[in-house]
Image: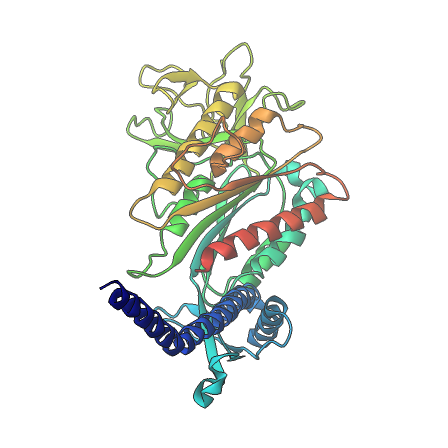
Length: 462
């Protein structure tokens, strides 16, 4: 009985050796497959990284033309792939919405080590594809053309930097509007494509004069037919004219440039003195001086909304709280309320109160209304997200205080400024140019415009 069991054990051991001998080639084959598959995986990863980088490079350089964009995309592919790169194929199709695409494909042949003994697997092709779609852009550029911007206090820098900036975008696919402001605001070029030449010419011929009417309408209604609305509200109205098709990639932006000293507000004011009719309202831009700006302060000026230079008159808004009253035309006519009293106050949107026409009150109101308009731009749920970029200068006559920087950062909703940042709303960015006026103003501003262009173009690409 004992000897019989021993023979059985010996017999089992012999079977295991036979089975191992049969399975060993299969194990070697699977190990070889795993190694060759790993080589294919690494090659695929290199290809994917390379076509992605090439695709983005081609898209970023489309404004230089497809030939140059294609060559730069190829160069980027080869730089990322490393030694012995395959030749990629770069094409420029359009999608169903007519949006420009860059398509990069590449195939590398992997020479196997183990499965090469099967002739059909001696070389395995591995491919990768990347498609980048450049969506359409609707952008309003809002420029300060007030008197403090003369020469290279900002004016010369604008005239040098803006043409370069608009040239970064597609003259056929994109739509851009130009709005400028001083004592009044105007649309220099309405939202449209083929914008490069007319915007360049408008900026070249821009005359820098007047106060700084940079505000928005806040909660006041803005008529679509009113060509003299507050500039930030004009920007919103211009952006709203471009509507996306369902599923289309459309990016909207506002680029707002100023020396930061917003000092004028627009209202329609009841004025019994005009035609002796209490129902008449007179459109007035009022303010126009900085709180502590030399001989101009502290007077509140009453400005023609249709003119950059027409000053209807002013009242002393120091200790007398505008005792001489509001002026409503070029003849110096005064505005009276229904009780026959001079109009010396305006209605603040901040709390609905009536406030005296002083520059401190007007400046605070201008900034409040601008912030409310910026919020409306960012939070309109019926339209694509709007990204706001603001640029502020350091005018040596009015050094930019931290409060002004915070204000401009609040317009943009820049997260680097926690006092004004609103979590959950689209993030923009504020850029500060410290050397205006001065010889460095133009190159610094041009560099900032190029940075903004790169950020917008990145948002356009998916």
